[in-house]
Image (cartoon, rainbow, N blue to C red):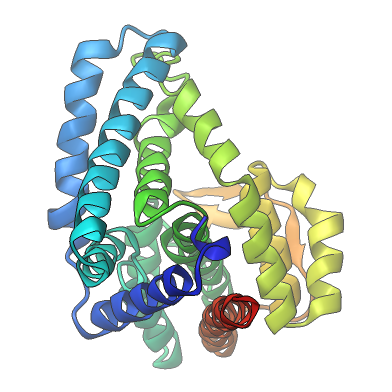
Length: 320
């Protein structure tokens, strides 16, 4: 593991993460064109050849996709590492830039927050609808802020913190590729599992990502609680997470809402209907100010991650 390896590898891990995040802040990746479009073509290619509606063929397709991506990544990384560690570090940066999406969804969050501050409710409704892929024409400002906070917390985990955990656990950028590929196929196949035309093909993708995300979800939730209101974050995590349909999302929303002191979940207006949902978090109703607090929570969590990695690097250096 990089995190338990030599101080040099730990420093390379931290260096790669910082540089990749800085580049993405300065020049956000057009992920839809560069990453998602090729992956969708790859997914359709595998569906056309493997999907007969059975779960076992979905498992074969998943392994073909994941092993191909991880083996190619590993080959390139170790060849570059044998030539010079700097080349391997630069490859890390490139892969992280492609797999971490800190800015890929933040434009929605920022634009919704600005629209709410300016009192432009129709604009905020349009933006949250585009982000979530559903109509929210009857949603009020507090409900829109609540939904934006929820999407922001979930996206920060899937696009940043989950990637970081697996990047640290496996050598080089293999873990980052593994996590993001598994996340993509969970979205592409797992969420469609059970559909009449799609069958059970996505069952394995859904279960596999659940296994891979088990540890990262809990580490992210713990970090939210540490950098926010620890007592409320842990309390909400323990008492509310199981009520959410997707437990992993429930853990993140309950701990995030508790850490922020804001009420999440609860019924919402979606596509002309009232969708019942349990309450997550605790405290006041969501608004644009709490959206700003969410940004602060995510950045403090990122700083905590860097601090832990730096301390591990120092500990490894002292130990040697």
